[in-house]
Length: 115
Ligand SMILES: [Zn+2]
Image (cartoon, rainbow, N blue to C red; front, side):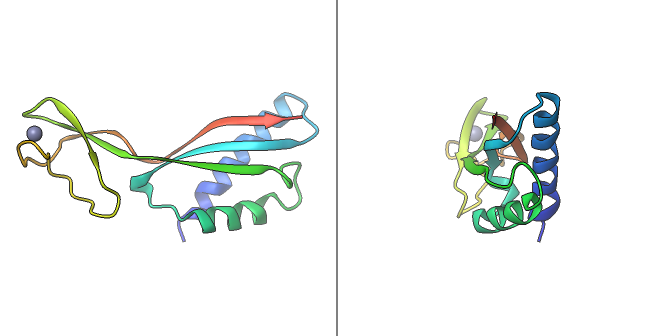
């Protein structure tokens, strides 16, 4: 399962943020996950609960937002969205394989609410 190291990183970022702000507890963590990273929400929550067990993030709510895959087509100079289920990286206009990934990869901690 590749969720574990990623969630480990998220928890680390959140705890560091809380520590820097002398927070008593972490209330909410807003996470944006790119569709390319293929994380399963259920596992994300499972690992999150496990990793925060003995921390001030124990009761934090983890909000997962999915970021669609957007690719720029070289010839058309137009971005297009890739359906997560189909994973077809061809441009709908010209059929070329898109060259530049604009979004949809990896994960970002968007916000952390602390008390
Ligand atoms: Zn195109």
